[in-house]
Image (cartoon, rainbow, N blue to C red; front, side, top):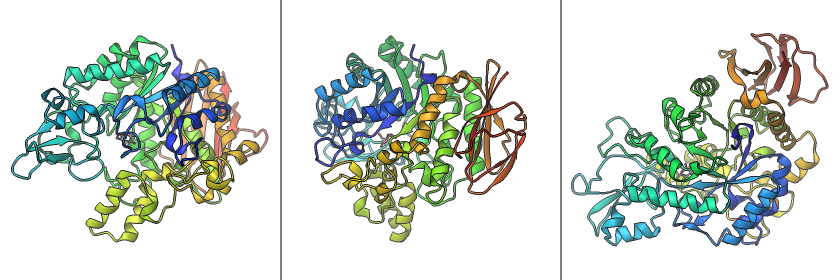
Length: 551
Ligand code: GLC
């Protein structure tokens, strides 16, 4: 059995990772070239986001062919070499399966559009409610209606994401078997992990107007979702106990996640949930500016930690991915305490019960893009919302302010390797501008500096391997009402761990409700030798500590 509880996953967005052939786009040989860097960090898995044939409207999350590699990223041989070279270093490869939808250029969808009845049933085609009126009032997650009209057919098709991403009909058994086949194909290639994109949206509840919201209530955690996941498991990855899976769960509930990621539920190994990353939204509305609500953040993180444990289910724990702004810009500080706050945020995640995911660049404290011209943006969701916000009456300047905070492109600027041109990402023209701060923030500099954010992440990963209490311990929130400190306690076979993090740039006194006598500090983000632990401690700005006691 793969011990995913002791593992750490590193996410690679290949387009922005490393360009090996000077065309400005990162590629698979580029990932291979950087395996030693990844190995040094100490992770067990690399999750590589989609590199299948795709028109790239949504950077590969619009798959045209699940069996072939987009030539922009390399060849099948490159992929096989990557798996092999990673394996030599004890790193396994996790692939990203986008099964809620295909690209509209997928052969199935093209046949459907050509009127082939078999393939029409692979998707959701419906008549309009009335002349010029979509079948339901549901909204696309990327803005606008979730239905697209096809005049030749006088029918609409459903797309919960971009118009070029038609939703697959999982109620059709043939579709489900096609998708299981895809997984089996990649298993044959030595893939040892799968991440399933927005997988809790695959079972639709019926097509009616949503009187209360944007439609999500009709397709999130739908009626057959658990059945479909069990079937997928049994008919593909479940045949290999070494394989680790993670489901991306959009707007999900704890009750469903107990089942998705329950130890014996036969569905998935673990789940990504996103409630803790909506604490700077207004309800579900992302395209607004509201300060992050720390108390809410804490409550959500703690609830998910405690309740998932109660139900013997497993979380993926993370701050960053290719859809999120950079965490140090979001919940930490880009200024004086950049380094301390990046390390503090890492501590929060890596001390928790769950499998930590690190997104490329997070381990060196990369910050938001700061783009101020729409020509610098690439993301379809950002481009759509830049227009929609102005249609709603916001000024261009206000629309920019919102994009600078929330755009997914903040997390997608190329990896900053060194001080060479384009941060060493490419010597061609990068597909997206490199963040201007690469001379100060880059991997080469941090590899040399023992006190860097990179080495701090490396130490956190070592601790998880060394101390079973981090991987297997129970979770108990500490001092939940404290307005500036996030703290929790872990316990396993008599060993105890206290993680304490000051979330703000001001000193604060903190008293551990369960006492700290006998604890020693395993890791902290301020350099000072052995520090005597008293029950009451003064935490410096953004200070974080992992304290440990045996017996
Ligand atoms: C997921 C992916 C995101 C993509 C969307 C549609 O949320 O992480 O990047 O745009 O699904 O596939």
